[in-house]
View 1 (tube, rainbow, N blue to C red):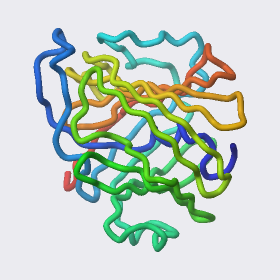
View 2 (view 1 turned 30 degrees about the vertical axis):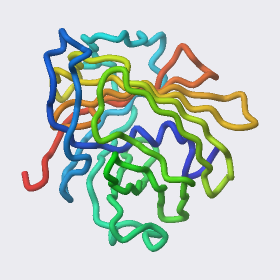
View 3 (view 1 turned 30 degrees about the horizontal axis):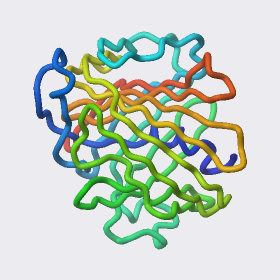
Length: 245
């Protein structure tokens, strides 16, 4: 699929959440959990380094240490920030209460993307995306993250995007807890979420591993396509900037 959606799995890498620590140390992964607020104040920023085609990348095990501190020279930077609905193009098709994350891509290609969410009692739901040219909605809205994230948790989803009318099936499982190392620092008690995506009438599929750390949110992600399973597209946190700082 091409255009704004590009890769539905890839766009999942562009968002962040804020979480607070709950549970035991990383030596006891079954006790590790993230719980608390799923949104951050307007102006909060995450700056990521993006790395393309990392060859023979080590598939992460269930218990960290996961070391993503040095992956060579990044091909781009992604600046994720919490925006207002008024900042986003095509905002009128989304609820007035939508939580908006803007991503500015800096590198060989330059782009600005917006992702829309709705916070519900049981978690944060993805509503769709927009850029200057078009907007895409997903039906039904998809649970991006549950209110509490813990090892062993699973959920499955199906949805269609409004541009291509492609049915996507996704499966999600929290498979590990431990320390993840990225250029921005080292984060203990991070949770590793494995998400797989399959597209109707297509042999293509993809798997996304994403690391979520207490009080910061998404700090790293790696996407592997069934077309090239020996390489991964990786993003790793360079800097976290809380609102007002």
